[in-house]
Image 1 (cartoon, rainbow, N blue to C red):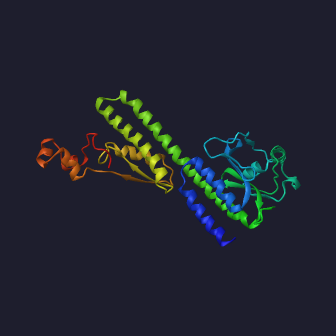
Image 2: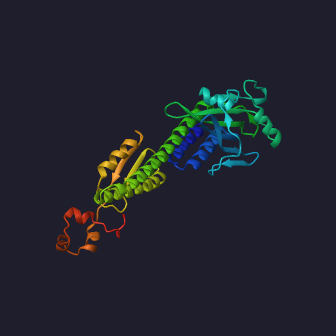
Image 3: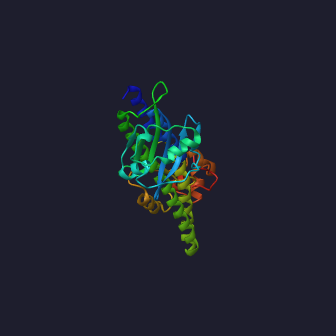
Length: 312
């Protein structure tokens, strides 16, 4: 493995770990692997129940670029039959390297050959790599086609690249899983907000106000979880803010218990609270006597929020 390839592997690892948009992530995974393998075409499949679904397709010779925008390529899913090389790779959790598909009788290549007949392309060498998550389960497959030498001629995929590509594919699977976890967390909190809201009318007026505030905090958390997940650039690390709620929100212990119960164990949470500055407090109460007349303690002045002062 050349030093330049080692540098690319490190750069790819950093780039993939920073991407949190699901569609852009899949696109970057395939582009990175194709660049490292120096191949002409490739497809990324993800497991969906009992089949593999096309998610991203790239073919430089045919100028074909499908997927990556949230719309899957318009091709039927691949059934999980061992006769199909991609399904075999996923089911057996094994990388498959083929020098010439037309001379390989181990798998059914009628699909690629039919595709070649329609498009005029010539599929020759192939490398199929399963994407394994941290539990060792395959969640999808990378299919690379036609490795190219420096002169642009098709060649077999080098054996010494297999381990490298397996490493990148594994990291890609873990990143995909992390992004899915974040989406599941947000949906759980949306469900939490809906349940809290539906219970408001069944409570006493005091508890109804408390539930309403907690539901608002839950909704704000969902919004800020989304923003920080996209902007933070640090997978597995989430900061929880409570916009427009100065100090520690009422009922925080209950909300924290729910957050920490449903978050995956590998996600770290930091809670961030904000307080009024002296200048912010002075806009409402020019003197401390004025604040006392309003029945406020030091903590009350630091956390008072009438909705006009937003989160700093």
